[in-house]
Image (tube, rainbow, N blue to C red; front, side, top):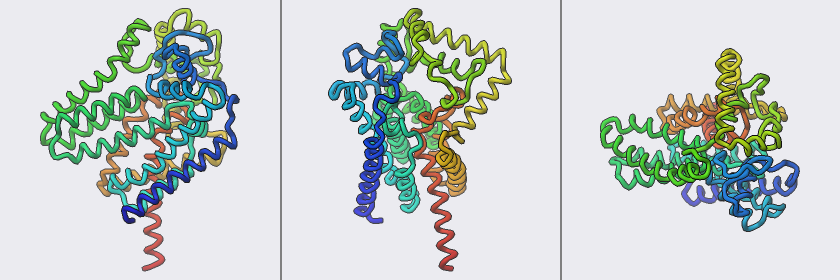
Length: 408
């Protein structure tokens, strides 16, 4: 495919993906059907001039329950268009735009990973048709679509750095800025970046000392990016929180007597987002103390019930790779995608393709926290494109084999 043809294809993918998603948004907007959850509540608080606060059912004050970047982005939308139907519509349009960018960007990213044009095109086409988390992708209620785009950018950055014959201080600063901003969007992006940096030691194994110096500069920039957020949390919450404060309750939701495995079998009333009584408790004792209390309860339960805890951990892991679903065709599609993706990764590793190593790093570094907490479709969403890319490798290989059989 020529450069001009590739550009036309990418634009076609973008506008086709956008048209499908906007049509779904307008045909089934479900405005007001789903209650606002933590992300939308904090964004509304920001839009109303109260800062990043009040994520739960009742006012609870300043919060570090969420990282700040997406609530600020969403809050900025609310400032302009309001928090009514117009604001929620623009929120959905913004999410559809992000999802369409992800679909379009998949082709040039695959080519950057040295995959052939047919594999890249197949992955892009699959991404147009595959919507694994409807509310997350179409309504824009969570940061996952933006996180997916940032993850793609991180892969590009990793490839460009790996191809440098000599690392520079300027590249360390640029990389640190990107990772720092990414960490203010999603903690799993920071984990993935650390995975890339660890793998970089193999790439630069002949020059480990300069590479470690480069990593120190990069890490220092990341810390500088996170410092204003940590200081703000120290001032407003009384504790230096570098990322999020929510781990205690998330752990308790996943590990207590009668805990469900995934979001489909966990009542939303279990948490302070919709439960007024629990929300009032957060307001009374403070967010930090509440999270610490929940974490102690969860750890005590795990120590008392190690076998049950191990089964829940295993179930979370299985659900992440083989998700359940209320609609059987989507459930089967997700599970088939995982099988094809694993096969595709095997093929790439066997070929010693850079794409195989990149995808393996993501699959190792991105999911572990989601093996610990309960399953939700939006957790896997940011890396779904990696599964589509790996699955496209298998489909392309089958296509080649069929073509050879037809034309011996």
